[in-house]
Amino acid sequence: MSFLNLSLGELLGLVGAISAGVVALYLLDRSKRRQIVPTLRFWIDADVRTELKHRRRIQQPLSLLLELLSLFFLVAAIAGPRLGLIDGAGRNHVIVLDTSAWMGSRVGRLTLLDEAKDSARAYLKSVPRRDRVMLVRADALATPATAFESNHAVIEEAIRRSQPGASALNLDRAFEYAQRAIKLQPERAGEIVFAGAGRVPEEQVTLADVPANLRVLASNGAQENVGLRKVGLRRSPGAPDTWDIFVAVRNYGTRAREVDLALQFAKSPAGEKHLRLKPNSEEQAQFSYRAKAGGFLEVRLNSRDAFPQDDRALIELPPQAAAKIVVYTKEPALLRPLIAANVQVDAVFDTPDHYDPAVKADVVVLDRFAPPAPPQASSIWIAPPSTGSPVPVRETRNGVHLEKWNADSELGAGLRTQEVVLESAEIFSPEPGDITVAESAGGPILIARDKNNRKQVIFGFHPGFASMRYQITTPLLMANILKWMVPGVFRQTEVQAGTVGTVNVAVDKNLDPATVRVLDENQRPLPFTIDQGNLRFFSGAPGTVSVVMGDRELVYSLALPDVAEALWKPPANVRRGIPRAALDGALQTDLWPWLAVIGGIGLLLDWLMFGRSRIFRLRPSKISVPLASRLRQRKAS
Image 1 (cartoon, rainbow, N blue to C red):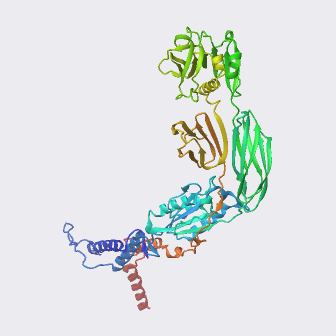
Image 2 (cartoon, one colour; image 1 turned 45 degrees about the horizontal axis):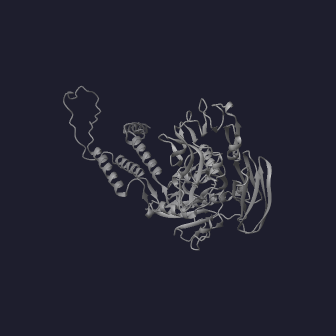
């Protein structure tokens, strides 16, 4: 027997103290003697006090014994006695439930997770009720669903509410978390129970460093599966209005498979291929599709297997953006090759007479004239008159040597040509905050500024004249200017549909992490690391993640479930199956309700038999009178 609330010494001490108090009350009780008289005529005067004496013996020993026994039972009920082991602390167990993406595969009408749930519930019923259990859901992360609970109904409800995730199982991390949880109370350490299929990455197939107290409840199901592994899209370098599409398909099973791969864009066929896949291998297919407008691209495998979640991917493709540029010039032939040749530019040429400061455009080009009001959009000023130039012109020279480019700025990146003699050039006097892009011996001849959310580039020379027209630097310079003014339009966009989990992106080894942004679909930053030319970030749920690196943007549509490549093989010494149920119910019977009932009944009987009402006590007067009358009747007869 064990006690839940009090120890045996505390129980005996409390019972002894209460018993001594009750006995003292019986011995110290004072009462007046009751005397029946025929008249009060000869009674002593009332002012004479009746002599009171302490009782030297217990008048009602049966009442005292009944009260002592009743109080003993009540105090024993408060102590919470149990029939069973003296050590009732129990042990701590951790159930690791596999909730990876693969657990959503179907076996008949049930999924693998349903089988794992049944195994976990069966194990829960086998452990003693005094044992505490924690449930941990395991996929790429180990997430505790409950704390250590002795109320097993809480664990059963958490098991019922578990659903398959979207990432692959990281078994090593799940075991590590379970061991840390149990080590918080090593003296009460129980078992670590893994319930699931155990489909893991290849590096964990032979995982042998497992906990010594591990038990495995395996869920065995169909292993044949063919699914999409990755879909990559990028604009073709030779044709920016064309998407190059790369699709990776993997056969996870042990048999060769033949499947049809089909693409649809805006519900119209965009490509189709028939693939032959070897067991446990991966194949790639390439497509090209021309689309300027945005829309949804659907990639589908016509395959029937137990895991259809990775047979379809839906990717949103952005439209081909174009920067609208309005050029006011009298000689459009000089600037058309520099501006209109880019397919990402929608160029409109007009004369200065039709100038509109409120024209709707991303960039306005002013060729050798100064308007009465500056444009409301970003603008490029080419050889403006000194009287209307946005930057003060110090002087104008002929035969100016271009000597230096500002390679540290985004506008001068990649520009190195220096042996250029300009027919004429204006020398500027820049203001604080202005960016000097090109310089001559006399001073700056190309200035850029960014004020009040309006960007301006001021040329002191004409890039379409003979001295600059045939230089390779000229189109590069114009491309740098347009990227700086309208960065979103000229940003290289790549779209990939991949699996949830850790994503690795190959980047330049000299990339500055300060220039990188990783944003989720709500434009919230995600943590990332860059190590030896590899950018790594983690996303545990389906969604869209953008990686912005200067003029390059990678959009990851993490919509495919991450299916691991192989099955984990537990070591031979690991315990398996449901253990034999412990007889904890009979050994841990609570006695306090019965003791409380017995104690209450004892006090009630004492009150009825010996209390002031004396309902069940037979008075002598009621016995003697009927008995005397019967004797007289017998004598008379």
